Length: 351
Image 1 (cartoon, rainbow, N blue to C red):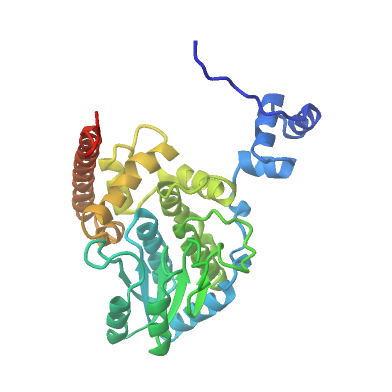
Image 2: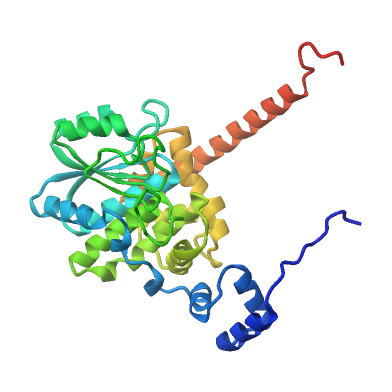
C-alpha cells in the first residue's frame, strides 16, 4: 500500500450548493471552483467560460497613458522605433506581437534580439548606441530592461527614449530604471489587478491600448494565439487574465493563417487532426521557439513569424526543429555527466 495520505481541503457545503445552483453545475464542480478562489458566480463563470471582455483595461497599468502617447507621437512623426526583445520564448513572442501591432498602426520599426553567448541577457548599452547611430529615437524593450539602470542612464543622457515593458521584479535597492516610462505590473505603485502576466502579456497590453486609441480594437483578439504560446512556455501561472489569454488563444490556434505559425505547428506535430492543448504549447511549440536562443541566434524566431511564404516559413521551422533536437542531445549529455560526477567518490572520503 502507498504511504501517501490524502488530506482533503475543508469546504463550505452551503456555499458550494449555492454556487452550484447559480451556475447550473454539480456541487462537486462548485466545490472545486471555490477551492480555486472562485467564490462568486461572476468569477466562477469567467473561469469556466473566458471571453475577450474578461481582459483587464490596459490603462490600469501604471505608465500606460504616457507610453501610448509617446508611441503614437513616434508613429505620427515617422520616428524609427526599435523593439528590443529578450532571447527566450517569452521575449521573442513578445517581440513578434509588438512589432506586428506597430506595423499595423503604420510605424517604422526594427528589432533587436541579443545573442545569448556574444551579448548576454537584457538591454545592453552597445546595442542602444548602435540604435541611436542608425537613427532610432524610441526603443521599446520586451521582457527585459527592469534592471538595466546603467544602459538606460546612457540612453536618457543621449536623447534616446526607452519604454520598458517587463514582468520581472525590479531591483530592490535601485527601484525602477531611468526609462522614459516603465510598464510592469510588478513595479512599486502599479495597481494593475493581475501580477502574473508574462513578458509577452505586458507587451500585448501596450498593443491593446494602442489599438484602442486608433479605433482598431477589433484587431486585439487574433494576437492572443501568440500571447498564449509565450505565456504557457514561460510557465506563467494560468490563473486570472493568463487563463483567459490561453483559453482564447488555444481556441483560435487552428484558425491560424500566419505562415510561420502554421509551419511551426506542422513540424511540431500539432497542426491538424486534433485539438491543440496547453501541453502542445508548453512541450511542442515552446521548446522549438526557445531552442533558437539557447543554441544560436533567437532572431530566427522573429524571421519565422514574419516569413511571407509557406516555403520560407517551413525552412526556418525545420531549422528550429533541428536546433531543438540538438538542445535535447546536449541536455542529456549534461545530465549524464552530472550524474557520473555525483557517483564518483568524494576526495578525502574514508569510504
